[in-house]
Image (cartoon, rainbow, N blue to C red; front, side):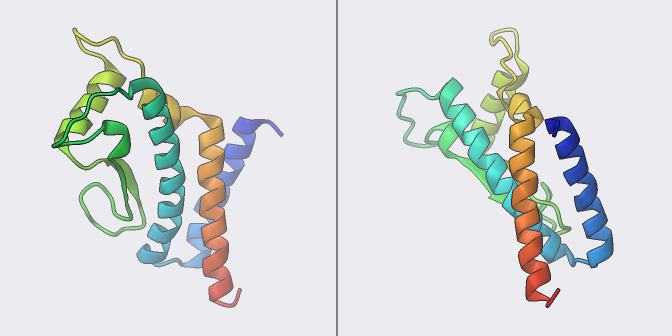
Length: 141
């Protein structure tokens, strides 16, 4: 099966599931958090591969070691979405500059590439499906 087709099908399936299963925002967040954790792992791996150094920052630590997942949107609201990112401004700004580029930094799009990677998208959707199946089984379905 073509990877893009598979991801498209799983995405459509997830939207259908949200409509049919009448999932609460907390349950939806449980599902999206499972996918977000998979995405975080892929982003950590890519960040370490491209931007890990021997520099020891005692205050902030290393950017690759400080990627967080929350089962809330970026405003902290539990609405079924989960978010992945850096919880301190220092790392978030560095990641943005490295990803998007500036006058001083050439963009390498390391975050964008992970977001657009079909393999990562497939693993995220499979993790979400697995969590959905757990919820449905718990409900007796």
